[in-house]
View 1 (cartoon, rainbow, N blue to C red):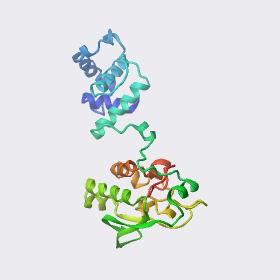
View 2: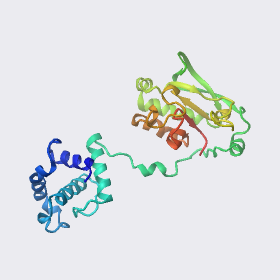
View 3: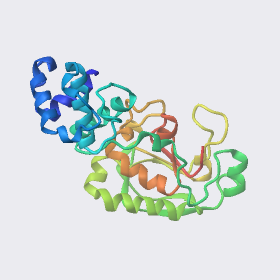
Amino acid sequence: MDTLAVLSLKNALNISHNSDLGDSHAVVQHYLQQHSAELAQAEAWQSWPAQRQAVLCLQLCCKQAGLQPGLLDGWWGPQTSYAAEQLAGLQQHQKMPPPWRDRYSTPANPNNWPLDREQELRAFFGEPGEQLVKVSFPYPMRLAWDMSTTVLATQCHQKVAASVQKVLEQVLLYYGFDAVQQLRLDLYGGGFNLRARRGGSSLSTHSWGIAFDFDPEHNQLKWGSDKAAFAQSGYDYWWQCWEDEGWVSLGRSRNYDWMHVQAARL
């Protein structure tokens, strides 16, 4: 077992972290004996070496927590290792971590946003800078570079206006305005801007009014998830609101430019 698994087992059995697991073997055996009815797969487990009994005990704790460690056989393998990792997360956060593979499933696209390719963007949204409308924010924004200036509305493409408002209304309803400010979701970094991509030569999605930036200071262009504020778990619902509408986060998709969200698929 690795160090994380040992700590998970100690937590499950209320064993001091400072004690050696070998010295706590009696606790492991006592726990297994208490739950021997659940160990039908593990015949003669009493004769197994202490290390295998410890793995069996961890497998049992994982199963009791609703996880899937595989067979209760006392052998350390990939399935037991993953279940132990889940158990550690459950113990630490009192909830299961989100399934990481689900992040790579095909995201929703209810508005049929096009691919982020200039030909597709022109076919769907028309020429850059055209068909712009005014959209009112459901809560006051502050300019990210001048927080003394309040922004109540902005320009965007008419095809994304209703979706933008829907997303931000859901954000406000879920977080409340105080939390919106604490999370800096009201720091507006810009929308429509007819320009090339930073670090690129093709037109930015901002040129069609289908992209927005938020809190650029804490989510800088080249920052990855190790530094960007929007990569933290407190922003999960923020991203869920956008992604349910088919918007794409460059941060969550490519791990850079975490400030940016766009109505164009990658």
